[in-house]
Image (cartoon, rainbow, N blue to C red; front, side):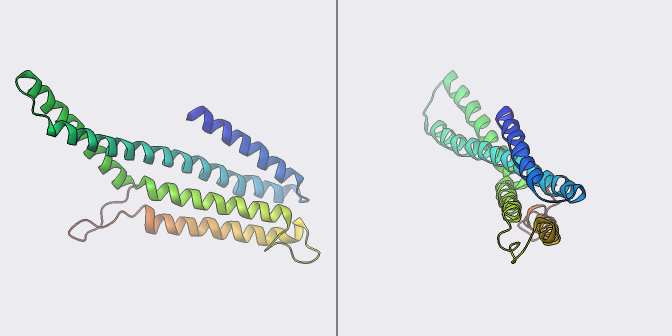
Length: 185
């Protein structure tokens, strides 16, 4: 996955970099587009890809491992085979439990969906701004005149992202007794 992700991110950096270069903006505004918008898009994209992969791996281990444990438990082994089956059952059970607990604690599924949604919103804002479409497309609009709206919308998305992340993703669900677990980071 690593090389494929790097290729995609490099391609995305170049593609969106060309888009920024094509905008009729001053260098300071283009710097904002690269530094704040493009870097946020790239970070969110790579984080979405990484968390999706980790989520799928952990879920696959949990699901397949649970099937294997069920099959091992149903065996009626005798002698040395019984000992091997007992240890295999224990090992797979432990692997399933660790995988499920890790995914539950770090909430990779919600993180992946959170970052995927945000990166698509940021990309959408960038494309709408470049095309001067809604909400940037007032009559006679230029990139320079629409730039303050673009900045405000990007900043608002990133501010909302921080609040949502802290409130919903970094704060794990309460334990059985109602107390919150420590944040998953």
